[in-house]
Image (tube, rainbow, N blue to C red; front, side):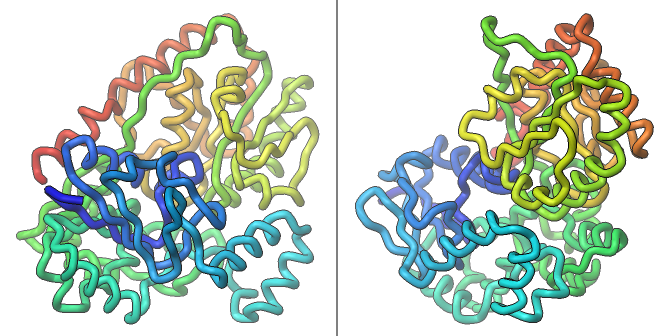
Length: 414
């Protein structure tokens, strides 16, 4: 590869459709590819969705290379090393086990994990930091993108500090830590304060926030000579084909098995869904994504756990209403953008809509307690007369998150 070069440091391959942060990473990297950069991805772990991934399905292989101590390249495929591949297969097998068996396996493999509900992130170890610094010296990039503060220890190596550094923050992690802890969840790292996060942030030349409210917070945590900008997830409208009809009383949720999704859906299935089915006896709920694996012990009437779905449009275009029961967390809830891109109104919480652009015909309906949430969802899910007006309002809202608008500040700064 020749020409301008960007290095991206992460622990996961940015595969869209798996989780919101990976979709944003994929969009950001494509933004740079479209502007003539070559990309080298340095991965600290074997964060692949499978033991082998076809790279040309994600990026133009002529301009993207992936390197990692636990990865190998075989033609057009990125392949995990044997030990890492065994870990990937074990992770998939664990996801399908009953909850009691999953708990037993975790205790046998790593007893300390018994007291942890979720891992917010893992700081890279010194060995990877040294390896990454060696790679940067060899590659001499014009810019280095770091995926969250958990990759910041790479900059402990003086050689890595010789290149312009940009942090993709994705979150204000001390706030997420506090919000999830307040719900009684046990997290790793066990402690993450504002001052600790600020120390990591100050390693970077530019910090990218994913929504305006967090830009303000992050700006107050960095030094005066650092630049903080906003670059939220871009979306493109996916209008419903004429031969597909929306179905009354059909609801949908899409999400990964991140702890804020699992926590919110457990609350929804326990407290909200029974109230909806009381109001709408024919109500149905489709739950798509890896969150379904974590909800198998929370099954309810007329709820289908699909797991990951290759073509979400086939589900989203048939629903009458989307739900996003977000009870804790921060960042920008990218699933809400997926919903509106497919013409769906959304019932969510005050936390769920944090950071979203306001509009006259806002596609989001806010309800923070179980009764209010069930009322709003029942109203929207059962009102087929107004569904076309709501559908158009959702599609129109996509203009606030066009690629030109969301990445405009990034283009100017970089």
